Amino acid sequence: MHDTGGMQGFGPVRPEPDEPPFHDEWERRSFAITLALGALGLWNIDQMRHERESLPPAAYLASSYYRIWFLAVENAVRRLELLDREGLRARTAEELTGLFSSRSSYERPIGAGPVFRAGQQVRTRTINPSGHTRLPRYARGRVGTVLAVRGAHVFPDRNAVPLGQEPDPAPEWLYTVEFSAGELWGAAADPTVTVSVDAWEPYLEAV
Image (tube, rainbow, N blue to C red; front, top):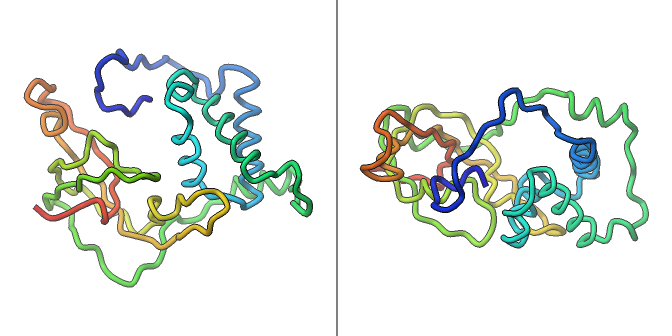
């Protein structure tokens, strides 16, 4: 909801100074349940993001951040019939803590080098996929400048297959691309503002 890119009718985003990680105990529990169930290995991070985005719009827009998490994982438990399945191995608190505390690179090996370089102008493709994407709608079909090449990473658009299907973790090159506010929102935008988007190579074309 906070990434609608200036759509009319939703009002301003009002950051909360010194906002706590959780406003209530149920939010903390929803977060923990989502992580614990994710450790079963039955879905990946992109699939769960797609589950959240697939909630009915009226429910999504009327829900707080962690209620969206709760509704999505509730749907996943129902769809995969987890309450009726046997043989699922629960992990101990120590195993979960070790899993979430481990640090490793998210970069992946890839056969070809990056197509674009820092300083190059690129245009984002105009796409409207039926599934998950990390390219914001307001940044599609816009010209920006590559600030950095971030290595090769799992491409979420292919990795976020429906629950129960085999994901495709094949990587693509990832770039940070900077856009002027005027390019995104027109002549009335603040000329001092820029927006940076991390965009995978299939999102981009040369200018």
